[in-house]
Amino acid sequence: MDLRAWLTDWRVLAVALILAGIAVHVVFRSFEAWLRRVRMRARLARAAEGEAGAAEWLEGLGYEILGAQIVANYVIWIDREPFTVGLRADYLVQKRGARYVAEVKTGKLAPRIDTAATRRQLLEYRVAFDVDGVLLVDADARRVQSVTFSMLE
Image (tube, rainbow, N blue to C red; front, side, top):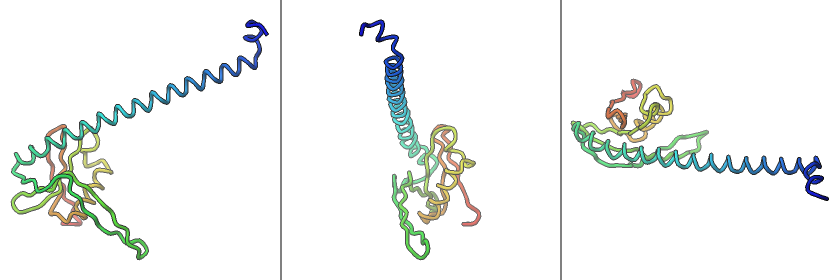
């Protein structure tokens, strides 16, 4: 079969188009995965910078840093079966005899108390770490907010 006949055969053309589509798909997916990794590394680097700066800000506000990346466990009972939950918080701090968990957030949404995930995380920290309160540290705005949950106070 000569080249002209080969190119005009619809089956060959269909296979070529399918292979080209697969190749474009693979290249696009690979690019997407690479872009996700780059963005994730940038977010992690930004968060690490925010955490490092937060310790200085907290100390400048009179908080004593008792620990960083502190771990706590608590038990939830489900149908009389224990389920242990492990947590890691950014800082345990103290000021005027009161102990707080300080959670450092970066970005537009995470440092906001109206963000459900942040609110739930702070409530869980308040209970699990048995502290007097929690602090929401907005690393980008350099703001520290004391968060109180009325049902626990």
